[in-house]
Length: 171
Ligand SMILES: CC(C)(COP(=O)(O)OP(=O)(O)OC[C@H]1O[C@@H](n2cnc3c(N)ncnc32)[C@H](O)[C@@H]1OP(=O)(O)O)[C@@H](O)C(=O)NCCC(=O)NCCS
Image (cartoon, rainbow, N blue to C red):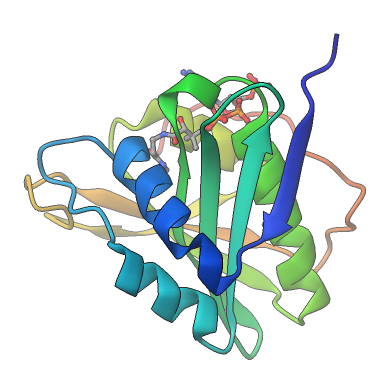
């Protein structure tokens, strides 16, 4: 049976839930979870989209926050709680964000990924994201990040993901 996934725009009342999802999605020692006040600011900010995704039958969920200005957008965070991973929730959240940002006039989404984060790298690559730069020591534990760009200009909302490519230029 197919997994039932629902995605909605977050409201201010969702700020506590967003903080919980973020804290449980990023559980590494160097990750500072964003608190309720931070989440409320994102929800209220112009040009920011905040999406919450839930999987039927599970308490947990996922979260995506992206900022949009003119024709560029930045993926600020995408996290799925461990209990909901590999259900397709991350892909559904990213698909919805891509569609919403494209509809708002964005032609490009930038995002950073820590080297070695194979789950995220595989997901973003499957959408056609390509490396465009590096941020050495970007994370608090000293890990480097690769900046990716995902072009939206020639993308239609029903295109779906594209085939993966090898990871040869990850570093
Ligand atoms: C990255 C993340 C959001 C993926 O969420 P998810 O709901 O598990 O992803 P999905 O089930 O939608 O999978 C989408 C694709 O991601 C890739 N993927 C996800 N988990 C993977 C894994 N463990 N190994 C390899 N590829 C993986 C696959 O390409 C997958 O497509 P497929 O199922 O058709 O093979 C989730 O692992 C997460 O929250 N990680 C911790 C936070 C994080 O690193 N966020 C990204 C910051 S840049």
